[in-house]
View 1 (cartoon, rainbow, N blue to C red):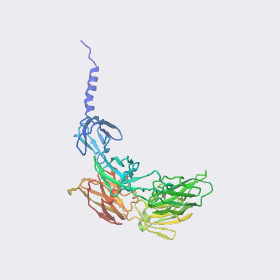
View 2: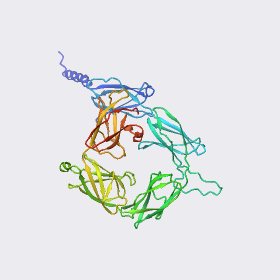
View 3: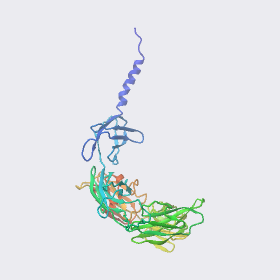
View 4: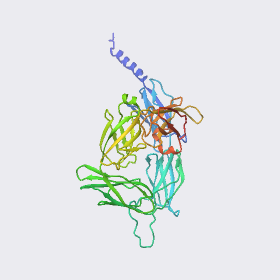
Length: 508
């Protein structure tokens, strides 16, 4: 009589467990296509990922992909391919359920567009070696350089409207040529294409011709007054120009710069005092360049400001229930590296901020409040721009805050009038920063962004009174504030009021 095999029950148990484990995973498949043509996109990289795990696959020649044995969870789905915008599901996470195979996941990649054109001189002749760049919002895209026919092409552009500028950079900042043959050097200023060029997915925007503007070769010169003993590493900054910061145009306590295009500029000088680690700077001076030389400009070294003062609330009840919020001073002109300073009031509202660079600042506040008025010394200030360039070594600042905020809400509809889900951004009219605690919005981007619900409802709360624009977005990562001159809905938010504003989702 054979002996019983005691291993068989264990083997049976192990084999039986395999299908059970497999039932807890699933397969996710789909296809990647070109959004414009509908053609499959082969060799696209597709990712299904979250904080715990990441599944990757490449599409085949038919654009299909498959993920096997996917653990149930919520994932972000992305796809990428050269020549296309990276696709990420900003709207919703992909939720995988145990043993449930999702219906085919269809992803559409949007192809980049491009801008092509040419640059000519004042006589219509092609110009070679001209740098052409395109701009959208805060972004500047890699420049193209014109060929011997004056032609250029800027690829890799997302759909949208772009500003285009052409520059002849070789002689920037240098004096005019010395010529003895009777000819006169022609100077070309940076020239902007007169209209925005619209780029569509997968297409080339053609017919862009930029005729370069001529400009007189003028000089801006002057001296630096009050340089401290041992001054070193002098740095001349000309904000509004493309010239690099540095000492190239400084000789001793004097400076001289040529070929600035007509326009408005901020001049200032900064530097170090020997090896002490102490820095100094001049007050920034505004300069308007036109058709003639500007000489004897004086840039005066000014001491940093010891700023003292007090913060108060307009509302009596707020004083008793709310602590004083932090305030920030942001450099609106980016004159000193975009510096940001913080005021942290004491329990009685007083504050002291030492060695503040003598610059201009925009004062903003969070904590459910806004700046209603300011006074520097005995001078009342309109708005939220604080100018310390001539404040002296010490100054007293008084700020009156208000905690009475406003809000805006409404319904977003598509072009057929049906409520829809869409992103929307709230942009202040003056382009200033938004409070970091406005409810209903995300601050991952430059301005608060929120998404409407299934019924189209959106809302922003805790908003300081003022004029704004509401702009609907297809993708907040592609948000372009420069487009707000011709799109969006204007809205005025008043203190203590709920403003209603319905929107129509605009095709972007």
